[in-house]
Image (cartoon, rainbow, N blue to C red; front, side, top):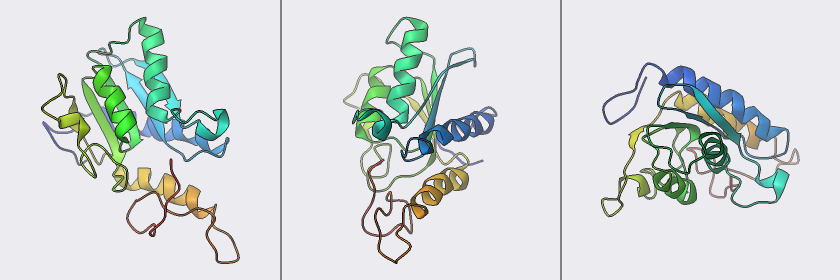
Length: 181
């Protein structure tokens, strides 16, 4: 296990495996496979989400936002204090901002996203000292499996004639252009 902060908790790998399973729902709708799960302070699963931008036409329907909205509905409050968000890909600026505003206690993510990541790759929204809340972060949990989800999906989008219809996510080795998640 890899991570940062105080170290990866024993539940992080099983919880990430659950997020990986949730990500499969994205592929059925033509969305980039990213999965997210919100766990309550007691470790119970509250909600899941996978990318639904293509399915819904909603530019904010990233896995993290879908899961955070569902968890808030379960709890009856936008405050997700004590909760853990587990997501297969490093959150973008929108998702990082949403999890900070929701007061998520812990963020666990798998693969780094160097072109749009906002938890250390390109920006570091969640650790900005100007904000009133900064979650604990554990990165790189099952990183290879999480990165493979996106790479495998995108390899299926490549034109068999050699041209690319959509390439990359910013993950290492994905080329200069990328398909937005």
